[in-house]
Length: 512
Image 1 (tube, rainbow, N blue to C red):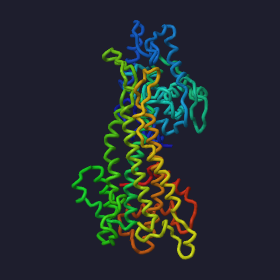
Image 2 (image 1 turned 180 degrees about the horizontal axis):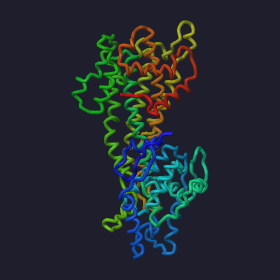
Image 3 (image 1 turned 90 degrees about the vertical axis):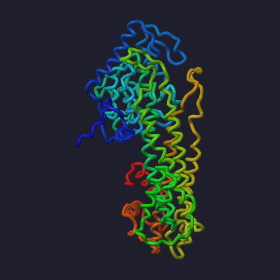
Image 4 (image 1 turned 60 degrees about the vertical axis):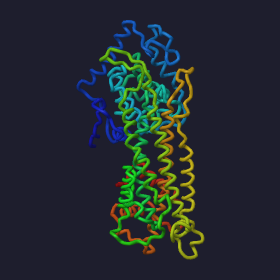
């Protein structure tokens, strides 16, 4: 078997695509060499020397959070990190899936690799080993307020390294101690700063944000393609997407979407019947809706990747300046704002596609297509209902997506005896964004099958010749025929919809 390509952590900045590749198991992770190990060890050595000289460092020889005024007796300092991991073992809700867990591990590893967290090289090696062996901590999704970082969920990573908690390994959930023993990885005794360094950061929200970004970006492309298909099925006006029109409103992402749709509708100059001077908004304004998210992607990437490549624990241990810098880099405000903004823009895609589907199934607005896009003819048309229920499913998913657009970041709660009195809610925002993405992908699957049915109906009636359209579009419709054959008799469609959702989430269709 060919060895996977390696991603070197510590050699430079990571990208969202790097995280997604590791999360999907497409590349393996290794630690950079050269001067990198020595850089990490210098931070740990400086901290050890400072403690030996009687220095006071938050969370190392003091209590945590509101207990920062409590001095830990020297004889108990070594036990403190394990206590931190244990008392945060109160996460609830569903567990992160395997891809999300890999993204979290990589995000934490990369943050500690900045060299200012005061951890040993051994700790980085052990984190990298979890990824290399795909021994994935079982991480509950709920329990973080996003400052001091993702303490509770990340305690499950720290706990596993100490030989506690559970891991997913080779398809089974097993005690971490058993799996570590099989892998010849002795449980770590955490050095004084290492429990805090592992847990006091934004790795969960950041890992999830990377995965969310990739899904959102793909949805902009898919919703453009589906808008083109819907326009074809509805006998819409290609001129609504003309470059001359969009030249006067120069939002780059919006113009890109318009250009994609315009190219998809290129029929070689054949004059098509124009039903309306102006199509309804869900067709005519598709670039304006999709373009909002498309134009947001650059700043979303900037903020997510800056967080990914940051040191975001506290305190910062700078071996070059020989200083301990106490601050609040664990605050996940940028990720919270990015995810709150993303879920709003993504939910608008769900709403757009739901409206396009509503036009397609309604004979009052679909310009001659049969009711509910049913392909049944003759007396059997009376008992066949086509995409009637699919449209209801899409509407239900859309409503739930829209309901979840309330920003999480504005619901800061004062916690931990008012020490954590302003928190980011970044992890909740990221989980919300992923749920909105899931719902929007489900709406997209519904529209994918329906729009393809509409185009096939136009072909059958002789009103449309796909051969005259760009191969990218005609090939897309042909591939959909293998996924979901023409609907002339009612059948259950959940299996076909789930296959479409899977294709969307795998980003399997080549789009633009």
